[in-house]
Every structure is written in C-alpha cells, then in structure tokens.
Length: 208
Image 1 (cartoon, rainbow, N blue to C red):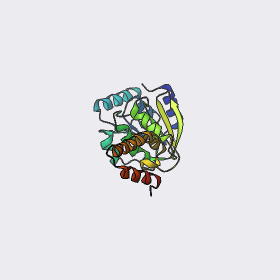
Image 2 (cartoon, helix red, strand yellow; image 1 turned 90 degrees about the vertical axis):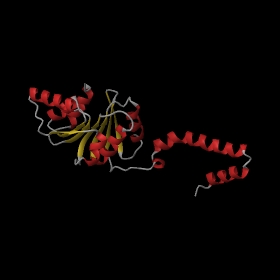
Image 3 (cartoon, rainbow, N blue to C red; image 1 turned 120 degrees about the horizontal axis):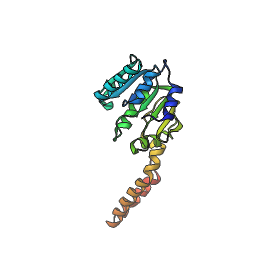
Image 4 (cartoon, helix red, strand yellow; image 1 turned 180 degrees about the vertical axis):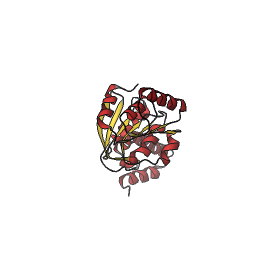
C-alpha cells in the first residue's frame, strides 16, 4: 500500500500534463492513472497488470493513458522511448544491482526540474543510491516520505562520473585503499624489498 505522504506528493506534483514512469506496478499505478498522467509502468507480473486494469475498470478510472511494458526493467529500460519525464518512481526489483540499473536509465530521461522517487530506501540497494546522489551536484535531495521513499529533484543534466569524481564513493573507498596499500608495503618489507617500498612512497608523493 502506498504511504499517505507519497500519495500527497504525487497528487501535488502530477497532473494530466505529466509524463511519468515507474519500475514496478501496484497501487501507485492506479494513482498515476487516476491523476491522468501519461504513465508507463514496467513490470514482469502480467497477473498484477490484470488486477490493476480490473480494479480501474470497476472504479471508473481511465487507463487509456497508462502503458504497461511487460518485462524486467533491466531489459525494458534501455530501449524505452520515453523522454522529458516529469516524475520517475523506482520501485521494481530491490536486489542488487536492479535499483541502480533503474536509476542509470531513468536519470537521463528525467527533465531538469523533474522528480526522482526511490522507494524502500531502508533496503541497502536503495540506500546506496541515496548516499551517492546526496553529494552529486545535479541532484537536490528533498527529503524522505514516510521514512522510506527518498525524493530528489534533478537540477542539471545527468552525468555518469568515474568513481574518483564521486565524493561519496571516494569517502567510502579511502580506508579500504589505505589498508590495501599498507598491506602491499608490508609484503615488500617482509621480503626485504626496501627499494620497492621506497618507490611506492615516491609514487604516492608524486602521482603524476
């Protein structure tokens, strides 16, 4: 069931002129349809799609602007012909690396000023994305809804950076890299290779 805070956010930011995409499908799909958005839901669960359509039909909710793409997001997203997205919701597969794949393909399709929602960020695969994006310059963190759905606003074109240009990755890698270098230096000392240690120190001092 979609949290009330998420429902309120969607109601405030989605209308009949909105282009929206979600990985996964469920009650949120019904909300997008009810708000009249031009919506695409990506899910491998055909039975879920049938239930959503049946419920909307019973409740008089039009689904003519809702497109279901049957398949796993990692297979569907690379060829998805949807651009200038106003709001994207990542709520499909939660196993690694699926949420990251969803982000990678949805982020470029999101317009500047559009919103990216990542659900279930208490799961590490979602939390990882949040940790990285909080320190990326093209994303503005707008907080969490119901303590589980992170909201970001895109403020600049998407950039796929190398790890050394991503502050969060650098920070979380620093200790491991130090330990590895220290272990390598210890191995040289144990072998009596003082020259090798000296060369490593010089390279560290003068990386270029």
